[in-house]
Length: 257
Image (cartoon, rainbow, N blue to C red; front, side, top):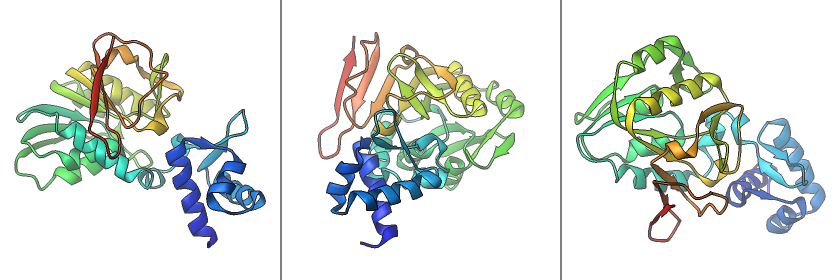
């Protein structure tokens, strides 16, 4: 297998498994341990993978570029996006966070709605929809995060109220809650949560059991949580509906109480 193809396969394995040992990756790729170590060194230098304290290898998702993250779990994000979009009632006013999974929600939205967002990608995806009243929050453009942020964005956002906020997250921890790698992103997320009647969170398994420096919210502030796998570490939560959107299975919804 060519080096580029092998490294692409390695990233796909890490995205599905969450983390693996070098020996496990060598076995799955049918190459030597030394070959895997060389590939991992290349990926670490690119900021795509990292070793944890136990020696296992995992994707370093928060430091990846937006383009690199968009290539991960594309089918999972599409499935999550469709599940969330199907729950949005016609005529709702919805605040959509930035990020690839929330972009999948926008792409799957089939009902008329008013959409408020700071994401240029989401605005572009919905720009030709005559049944969508689109409000793009301006401000300072963040090229890496692909969103508008800063004081002007927050000032605009605070002028609006919505039925539902649909957020993604850089990291979600069972006790520390939602967090973000950038303060500007965290500010927008917090303002959206404060401006909506219902607060929804949609994340894939790569974001679970992780923490980033900037606090967004506790999990107790979230009414609906959409994930792609069961989350065994999630503690009992009052009034939080959890929907597990698993591949090849009927959607499973339950409430943690």
